[in-house]
Image: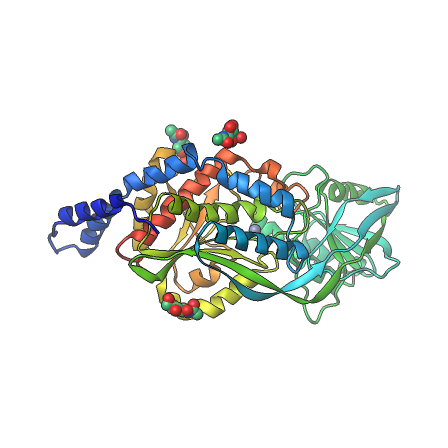
Length: 469
Ligand SMILES: *[C@@H]1O[C@H](CO)[C@@H](O)[C@H](O)[C@H]1NC(C)=O
Ligand SMILES: *[C@@H]1O[C@H](CO)[C@@H](O)[C@H](O)[C@H]1NC(C)=O
Ligand SMILES: *[C@@H]1O[C@H](CO)[C@@H](O)[C@H](O)[C@H]1NC(C)=O
Ligand SMILES: [Zn+2]
């Protein structure tokens, strides 16, 4: 890899201006040194921004993602499509000439939804749009036909538990936030089964709908009967709530052909730019390559995966070679609970002291606003300073909490973690639904996301010291 002469000059300048400071306030002293070191990256930051936002790499992460998402499509854990996606990325990363391109095998869940439908039979005939939830059992081949009990919360279900026996429980819970409301998707079947229900239909976890059901993973408990479970649209959940509030009986026929196969082999996909001075130390940038089986997985998490790839590409294009290794990891099995990431952590945690920061983009690549960050106060101070390098595109905020399903294993053990923050106002409209397509992605927003991701990961990888824990 070719290094820019520029870097040598900047280093020289830094050494010349790094005059000793009075030793009475060690935090202040480090801070002033580090401030100067970070300010020294402003030309490189501008070069990255120019290339990503205005230059030859403009729209590249979007165009790469479009080609990938349009030809490969959705990438469910255990599916043939996910295998194709991993092969595709492996070849692309190799062809680009990135280093240590390799696959790390992981066993992942293999669940398929099969044929599924729901019909309201009474008080009128109506086809209910459903998406079965990941890990759901099927119905018997003839389906389940039962009366519906509509509840608006777990509390209401507990109070009316007697009425739930033998029925299909429909949850019409209001949407507050994804983090809070998602418990209905994750635990709805278990709670309904405890009350003796035969199936559960759950209002999709979103604030907006055009009759669109949203899928996602759900969790059975070993001592509770496993009942079939699916999400329905906001519209159908609200309609059934209105009908039942009139005291009118609702009958639904549910048919689900879901099937759980033995765990399948899959891979985390890895590529690097090897560090020039501290090759064993790692700055990790990541997104997950798997997706749900609906839509194209363009937003969740094609965008995050492809801006992470873009970070390595931009650095390579500029001929930059950071002191530490910049490692791209494209996780597998995220949607099934971070399966690929957990194994990666188990295999690599022996080297935890060499992990400088773990970064994941898995909350959209819309208009970026900054970074979520988890780490010590001192590290946060350094991150704030690094974000000043993004003044030219006005993305300088640092927020609390830089977690993500795939990096939380490291963050819990004290490794600094960062996640991309962006305009989430429409994210959950499309999340885990047929609506997650390239149409929701925007090239100029992705350019900005890529610039943020690249400047931050490059500067951390190249600073003299690792982030303090
Ligand atoms: C990049 O995308 C924007 C927005 O779609 C478009 O207007 C512009 O022409 C594209 N630029 C290039 C160089 O492809
Ligand atoms: C730990 O780091 C060393 C040095 O970079 C490397 O050779 C080794 O493969 C790493 N081990 C794991 C499990 O990642
Ligand atoms: C910069 O971003 C902030 C939000 O983070 C916004 O309030 C402000 O208007 C923006 N400034 C410019 C010049 O775009
Ligand atoms: Zn995701």
